[in-house]
View 1: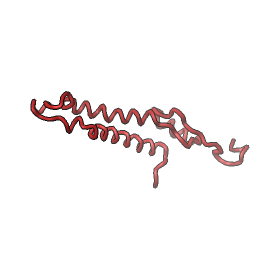
View 2: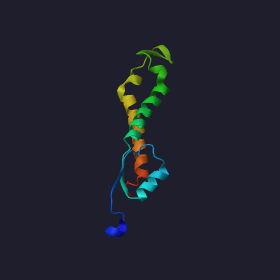
View 3: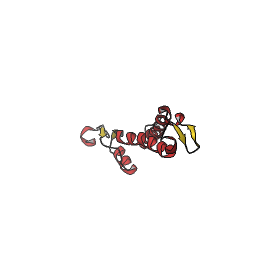
View 4: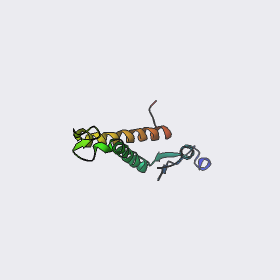
Length: 109
């Protein structure tokens, strides 16, 4: 295609189903002209992973409104508040998006 059209990498490819790809495959795809890679599944998993990790770490505080490893009369509201676990999910997703940006070489210098 380069010879026929007279310019390097004349096509703009999209890497559909890129989630889960190994980094060396991503680098190969970029070298072949891929300009967009779909990573929705990776970001969904990263979001879930934040919630899963939060639950595992705080499981003893997430079984009832009152009563936890610190005492039978201790409240748990600050643990089951959605803002807490949603934030943990957001943090793990942000980390995964940043990783994808590095892999895809689309960071601002």
